[in-house]
Length: 123
Image 1 (tube, rainbow, N blue to C red):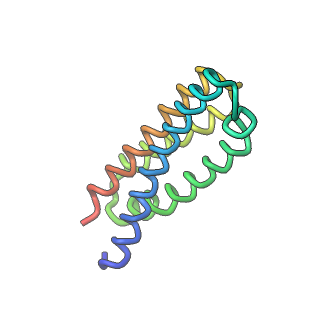
Image 2: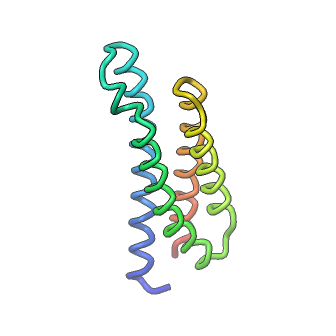
């Protein structure tokens, strides 16, 4: 693979990891802010906010991890990330609360691990 393409894929993987971290911060901040202060529920817990986040994660993962899987022929990063995206999608079907947060956190951690594994395979 030539360097420009590797660099683009690496940036997308890093963006996916950053997005996963931001998602975890969002989950924890939402619980703390809404529970402790009772503000921001309309925005922080909005289903539209979560759907957009999942859509962005899907696009980044599809490009970076899909591209990586085609390049390095390793299934583990792809399967790990897709499992994580499935957990994230399942979280959208749940009412707000602990179950949704747990599924989301499991999902974003798995997606992040998929991106890390994909970065390690980039040569």
